[in-house]
Image (cartoon, rainbow, N blue to C red; front, side, top):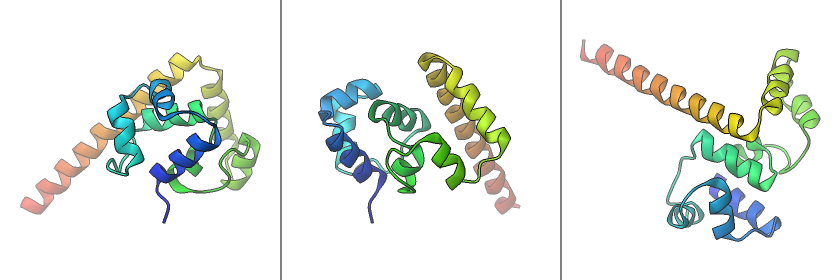
Amino acid sequence: MATWNDRLELARIRRDISPADLARLIGISAATMSDWRSNQIKKLSAEHAFAACEALKIRMAWLLHGKGDMDEGIQDQAAAYNLTPKHEALLGYFDSLTPSQQTDLMRSLSETQQRNDELLAELLARRKAR
């Protein structure tokens, strides 16, 4: 079964971007890129996933889950995922941000998700301890 690492490598090759150039575009080190390419890193942060998708012009659902085509348009995504008007509006707002603002927002959302996951794990551990 193909992993996100495999799909990233496929997209990189199809876009004719060197590993070093892709690492630079995403904002990671060459060593991290090497670990990604060798499947040594199993999880991808939201910030890095977004940066990779932007750099390679690919869809997030395809990169992370292998769903749909590598580079189909946003209208096709909306139809494929049955997006509501609220979802489409949110995508529109996101697209209206500058790349820097998008990166900041993705970083903030990723950090919030990580904090929530940590809090949930702590809560579950406390329940087990009772």
